Length: 204
Image 1: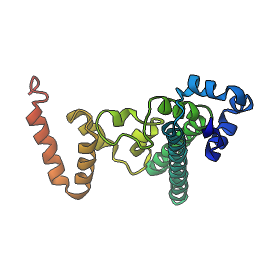
Image 2 (image 1 turned 180 degrees about the horizontal axis):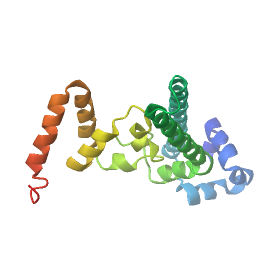
Image 3 (image 1 turned 45 degrees about the horizontal axis):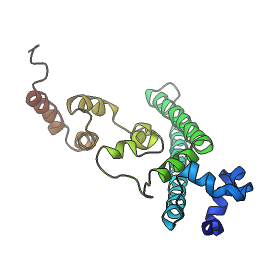
């Protein structure tokens, strides 16, 4: 098995599949069983690229959450603890800490299985960027829900248009931007959507 001489492969196996590496005589059989291994470069590229992808995503998201928590603490330090804004920041900090713990749990106990699944399914190193698959081609829920962890996120607009637009994220984001820039047009758009979709027609 020539691929066993690959240094990154050795590191991966030595870190996450120690038992298999110790039994080097049967390592090829183990890989066939656990990773649907075929003795070619495509397998090696898939394993290494997906390993780098998943580890990079974890590092990116943990860094983002840590920076957000730091910013929240800085903002809280300037506020009275009895204010609504302070309580909102306290809530945002709590859910960010909870999500950080979930990602760390994924890293420790689930990331290798996720990598293995992508290798078995012959997934490329990059994530799906469009269509329904984009919603499911994720390591954990935070990737799709990231906006909800920002203290500045406009939840009221999200709720309104999530109902009116049947959960179209890109349209919701556009409406949040519109609300910031042109409130008059924002409220006019709400009225227009309600009329176009004939909401509440039985109650008018």
